[in-house]
Length: 370
Image 1: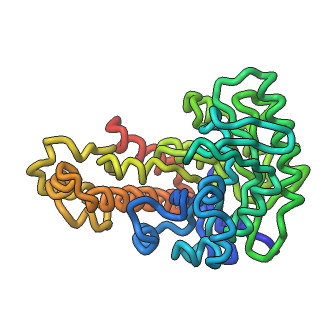
Image 2: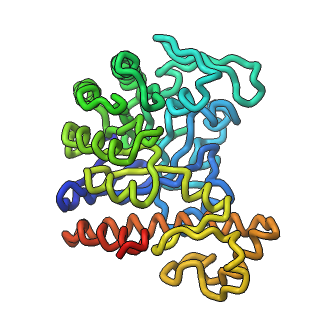
């Protein structure tokens, strides 16, 4: 047995399930906290767990560069190395191929790139190498190496990308070592071309994976285009496998994607926002640098149970203005807490058959357009 996904309930296109791994179970729809370099920035792993987070994400590219797969393996894998004992998914490095494109040279056999750390050392990463490093990291969910394109992109370029992603997916699947409680996901590409999304989904499902990601979205296209591509793709994927929308996103993005059948999400937004004084609340976001919070005795969000919300907005504002590290820590934990509360409420609404009403009510309050 690899990963086990159980679909517990549906409400329209929305799905409620759970994924069982060798390091525990996580409930879906799930939001994965991003721990790129084996750390969720500004938080200890106990703080991450306190938010309700059940699964985190690491990044193969960054961990390959520092400290290296060999060292993490020697230290007992990412779980032991980082102190996170729940499920871990590792991104293959495909996104960095795009984000560091000025340092990258694409080849059929893999990716040649120059280190973003010192700019001098050249590295080469094949699909097989990415899978091997993820094995060293002991990640529960391995991602096949792919290439993510900036949008918009010319059709001819996207056609070549889709076919190469399929070839790399096959090589990644062949290199993956099947074992109980671990799995590998393929990544559907195709940019904003419906027929190419369908082609990519068919290619990957023919290979056969433990789950399927929808990649190449939230990279510059309008939200409605992203939703259209999700709606085209998810019906083509097996109902008994988890579906992961990579790098998304805002609370409204998540609600729209859940409505269209997505089970898993990750995004740096809540943690990055916490480090830049932004707080998510049920009534929208707050900039805690704003002078209006200087003497505000109320909590950030009176319906939130996180440590930051046991304090006043005035105190959080004070920490931010003084550049105290505690301010970033408290806001980061608060934002993850907010996201996990949202996911819990989404799951409950699907179980009770009222997701559409929950979505409508949440958006009305969040946007102030009741």
